[in-house]
Image (cartoon, rainbow, N blue to C red; front, top):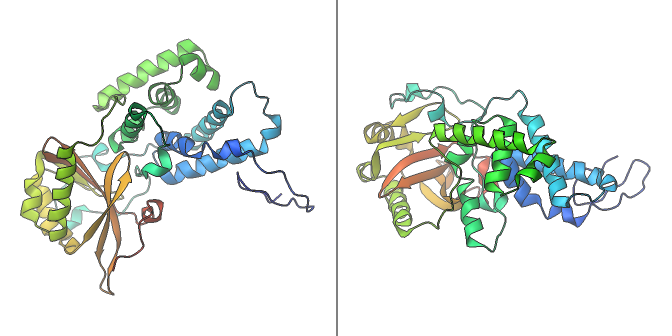
Length: 333
């Protein structure tokens, strides 16, 4: 059989057309992608997991008995797909989670490594919701820091916490989905909360829209970065600011080291341009470097986290595969 999509039809080996997949399945793609992204920490893995989920549901549609809603049924399939993918796999992390900071010299960079946490475009993981409070909670639950903290949890605890704290499922609904008891779900939730508290990141609170102070600080960052005024940029940093550059293990702590890196190995970014995108519930920037052949080419995706009037964290994902995911152009003039 050659049918492989969740929404189309295709011929079988004997030329007979299969019936189309129920439209109800495709309508859940975005929220399922958000769920799988929180579970897996990788947008590429999440999209593959959702495709597999919809394919399994499409193939099993004839056996769907309607005792649960289509949505609950899809979440059960998606959870099993994610648990299978996570079996025997190390957690995805950011460089700060794995070791001490290093001197701001090129020799500290080392070689790129696989398996880091990946960012995600808002439109791919955040379904449209009419309730502003729901939108705010959803955005908080895909922040890089929160998704990174989730990766500290064992897979089943991760599923319980996401279903209970983010998606607001009842304990009995989660117990049914995981073939467990309400007591086991409540116990797993308590352990998950304790682990998250140990990382310094709690369950996502009701958030608020980006305030003007944060937006103004992002605007100032774009201005000084594109002018490559390192002194002005360093002045925006918190005294404990950190910078990391996945897929490299190197990370830097403090304005002095970050400034030294930008004046040294990072100086090749002079003349760059930043293009804003919505990512992980916030504003991120597609970073384009000058191309000797002309124009500017994709280089990285930058996240700028702030607190008060200072930048606290710069995360630069040096993975140009992400640009199409965010709808960013493959070149700037």
